[in-house]
Image 1 (cartoon, rainbow, N blue to C red):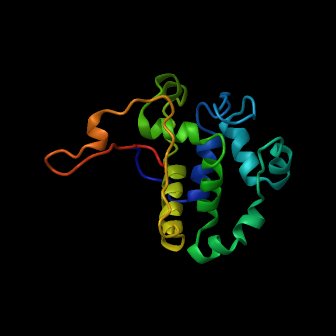
Image 2 (cartoon, rainbow, N blue to C red):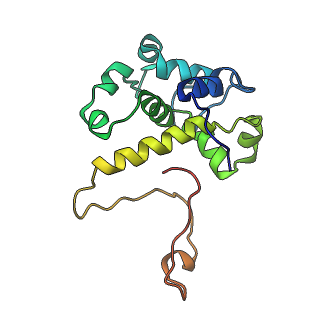
Length: 174
């Protein structure tokens, strides 16, 4: 359990990224060529058009909030500004911190959170995903895979048990 979101969603998310303990602690995401960043910096990149343009280096392209809020899918899904900001943050380096909250590992990353569970942000991410799932459908016959490189899966993953259950559980958002 990570608690209840702040009643003023935008203010709550901003506090989680800019005023809570650890907001200025650097981390290096494993699959982004951004170098070291901080939650505070990622908040600015997500919410400030100029900072977003400056961060758009190499393969990283940060779309502005104005452009995102006008996108047809955002409009059709009825996403709030807070949900768009949260989803934008999740698609960048912050995904690792949010997933550490939900998974409870890696231990070093969880400890570095210093108790910040990003409750309001995660609430907005989940809310946004639910809304998007109502308007976005996978094409018929499309398979979706989640890469798990280098892992050998146990038989229980592919062979159903006596209850017909197989597979695994992911505690973070995928």
